[in-house]
Amino acid sequence: SQVVPLFIARLADLGIDVEPVIHELGLPPEVMGMREIDVPLAVIHAVSDRAEALTGDPMFGLHVVSWLPRGAYGLLEFIVRSARDVREAATRLVRYNAMLNDMATLSFADDGTEGVMTHGIRGEPLAVGRHVNELVIGMMVRVLRESMADPRWSPRRVWFAHPAPADPAPITAWFGTEISFGHGHNELAVASEALAQPLRSADSALLAVLDEQAMRLLAAGTGGLDDLWLKLRETIRLALRDGAPSLDDVAHTMGTTPRTLQRRLEERATTFSAVIDEIRRDLATMYVEGGALGDVEIAFLLGYGERRAFVRAFKRWTGATPAAFRLRVGARP
Image (cartoon, rainbow, N blue to C red):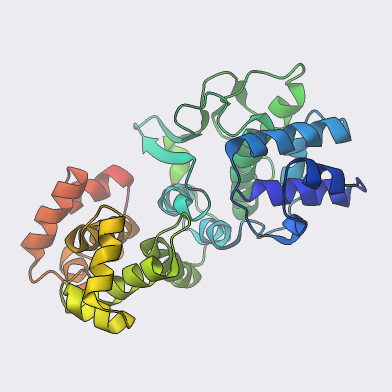
């Protein structure tokens, strides 16, 4: 969670003594200076509840949206700001969401009428809780408004997982659109024609650099992976251009033995070939969505000897050919 450190920092910024809260919730003393922290969902809810109680602000989460400095969400935020248009911003946000959180799910779909960003947690009808829900969706809208240089821009509609507060008028006023509550997940909907709206902050050169960094992080995996596992995934990613590497070669590059590497794979109930397939799938999806590379180039980058082998693998992973997938996500041909 990035929200817990942000909420604690905001309380301190308001002059509130946060030490009792930190102690009560078992947080580390340095939590305010942390980029993120691994905590149970219950702690995220508790921090939100304590923040509202201590400040007396029923709109605490939404007010944090305006308080946050530019770049508070790091690499992912700058990727969104550098995108060409709203559609590309949405697809990049979904693509790299795992860098922020391995608990919440994020998806984007366009049915020809509206593009819908859906955010939630399976089995959790309140998602991340009222204040965090409003922060998450509010940040999406804020970044788009700033990227368009249009502070009055509003989405078509917003749905929230949580029930309506006693007075939802400030939320409706802030978003400037239809608001609905109690859906069990969060949604941000934009008219399909608005998805092509260009962003004033677009920077294709910067986006290419940020994409490369994000792909590297995503291919390495997230969610508490140990150093050896991170190194394994990165070693495979770098070796793919020369074809699928062998376990012996990867172990040698990593400075370990094939036996040790095999044991670590067994501990995770997986196989070496399954890890290669997973990394190829993740990278292939990102390359195809990006729209800058053709099938032949992607096949080369993923270590396939021919285009047909890549197309067959991509259809196995996604249920669609690369061409059909590009049409589905609105990527450039």
